[in-house]
Amino acid sequence: FDDRDGTIWMDGKLVPWRDAKLHVLTHGLHYASGVFEGERVYGGEIFKLTEHTERLHKSADILGFKIPFSVEEIDAACNELIRDNGIVDGYVRPIAWRGSEMMGVSAQNNTIHLAIAAWEWPAYFSPEARMAGLKMRISDWARPDPKTAPVISKAAGLYMICTLSKHKAEAEGYHDALMLDWRGYVAEATGANIFFLMEDGKLHTPKPDCFLDGITRRTVKALAEKMGYEVVERHIMPEEMAKASEAFLTGTAVEVTPVASIGDYHFNPGRTCESLMKAYDEEVRRGSDKAALISGSAA
Ligand code: PMP
Image (cartoon, rainbow, N blue to C red; front, top):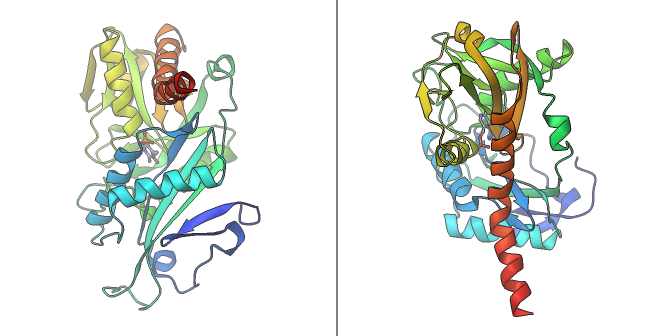
């Protein structure tokens, strides 16, 4: 992914993609002292940009460092970057990390760096293909107790268990894994949150007390409520998945993606998945449609 044309925003300026490098003694590499974001561009507009940038700042605060650029400056940098690279439907990845001045667990005086990359990334599954649903397994790794790790930060270090879970799932022919938490409750997928349509006709989703409360999760919850669904946030035991007729993941990358099975539990992606996929699709395109309408009427 490092050998391509384009630019990357690094510590305040745009550099050629191939030159966006750092030193091998970077603290972020050795001790995972990095935080990042994942954002989507729809029709040339970054969806919920400021919410993502604020979460980036918060993630860094939780890890005890301050990003040397304000939320406004980072928002402007993301926008400058997608314009410079001509991205219309794509993905944006900001990342902040502790630099390489001190080598050791302690890195109090290391420079905090920020880089942002973006690339064209249109949705490659048609809604029909997505409706087939993902096949998932239950991970052997559990989301840790908030006393064990800074679980609500989007911290690079926490992705160790996500990659382990995802690799094992892929090696066994599954698309993804569901992680339970340290108490045994259903938590989240390796890069997305989860919802179930239960037999009471309500949507149930795990209470985000030891994993990321996704921006997509919050968006979909609000959309579902607007459509008349009651959304219940609570602790869900894995056996309760037997009572769910539909299940779906939510996340910036996966958007709303139906789940066909998790281990021995099977679901039937149906009307609820379909209508929320459609509602989410309309929601993310609203900003860019508005922009197109305004520029169209001005022309
Ligand atoms: N959980 C994890 C572990 C993730 O990596 C993501 C993706 N950022 C999510 C949940 C969903 O978060 P969001 O909707 O903000 O993308």
